[in-house]
Length: 319
Image (cartoon, rainbow, N blue to C red):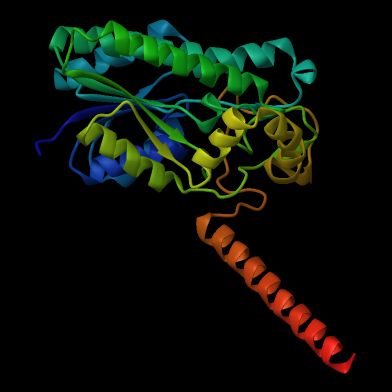
């Protein structure tokens, strides 16, 4: 496969960083964009190549247009555009300051719309290109304390469906989305927080590299959507098939697994400006740990059951 020109917005951390490194390992030429120049330079250094770095705030349409123009000046075309730029806020809707809610929606929905508009302008002129948007399980279900993020991701899913309808005249232009569940990135700890406790990804948690693998697969063989998450389909089934049960359980489960016991005072995190991010955070259980815990619990339950049956049989013999 010949080298591609790949633009990655949100490339300084998390899934965007992992995707950038995966494309670089394939020999593709990169244009890296995010608000954080230091983070972009760190990623660029790890690629072993000379990617173009363009500091970009996706909430500004003119900045995204300038990014596209810079990519075209360097390479003359854009083959793939991956957008993973996102921010998050925790807290009940009524507790979130209006400006915090609005900024999350502006970044995660309108920012993605700016990316789509700029990418499609290039793709239509070229007659080809692949746009890969970072979606979320929360584009298909809802969860308390995350109203702004849920609103943005549901809106993004609707936008992407519409864009597929509107580009049916361009068979070589592909609109794709990767839909992860919980991923071990810094978005949880860098989120604005009005919930009182630091957020964390509920188990099972996937690595950003696993999601990046799905992004590469979409770039190679475009599809409408690829889901990454061991529990995604089960959660979606509960949301659509058993809504009363889902709604009764989701809040206590979110408190138990989506919020840590690490207290925090209200703050705006990184949603208004780039700030240093720290990978990791409060306990994050990956697929292996969850499977091991489940197996251990099932084994213990089986042993206890057998012991109870033996005790009952002994009691009957003595009786």
